[in-house]
Length: 345
Image 1 (cartoon, one colour):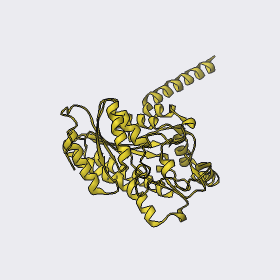
Image 2 (cartoon, helix red, strand yellow; image 1 turned 90 degrees about the vertical axis):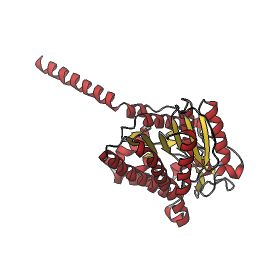
Image 3 (cartoon, helix red, strand yellow; image 1 turned 135 degrees about the vertical axis):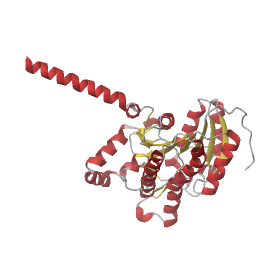
Image 4 (cartoon, one colour; image 1 turned 30 degrees about the vertical axis):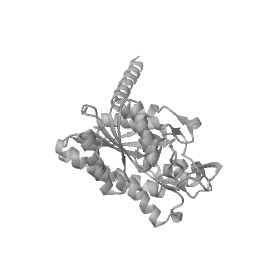
């Protein structure tokens, strides 16, 4: 790769964001840029990367676009080496890149299933390997895995994506235990996301009769990006949950998974598509970047702005478990004291 001198200033935080051309990755790159970070942008689509560079620079950060297919370990390793050669030591690595197929399991080909797994699971593995190769000798650095409520709970029509997210969850837990065993200064954490308004629903390979949509409630990608930044700054927590729907799903799955199976069997097909007919000419990003097919930039937002929330009170709760636990303890003590006072009277 050609060397690109972004800046001689090596004091700003150096961050790598995969899948940076659109969706959560694009919003995350913007969020890091707003605080002056140097951001290496990894993605396949050249149009999206070019606009992501413009976003980062407009917000006061420094951008280094590196066209990368996360399913190729050699490309990922080369991207990490290039990022460090130009920007300096990588301090934060954010794995976001993904693709998917919306279809019943029996309607997905082996090649399609393999591709989703290579991007959504092995892409995270390769990114983590490249980051650790550089962070462990320095005994410093943070890796943020962008996950999903579907890392715990599978839903119909997304078996490939759910399987990959479950795999990421398992490998990240194993890695975290190994780092703790070695008392490493490198940290890894995971952010479990709800339905997010990203362009994925405009370019996902779908065999559904209706247009694909996220299962409400839907959150804007900036909510997800704020969660990623917080996790990068506070990686001591093993994971963060974003959105009340994520919390509700994980609790329901832990308490009554069989009932949830039946509920999703009844509602999961209709809730993931709307009344719009599927556009037969829509771009698909499974094998090639969608922006290259239309010569357009998709940005961070999808088609559901009017139905999406810019806030997640549950995210605040996930970030402040200690304060909530203390408040709950104080309230419980007050109730006990009040009850004893009434009994004495």
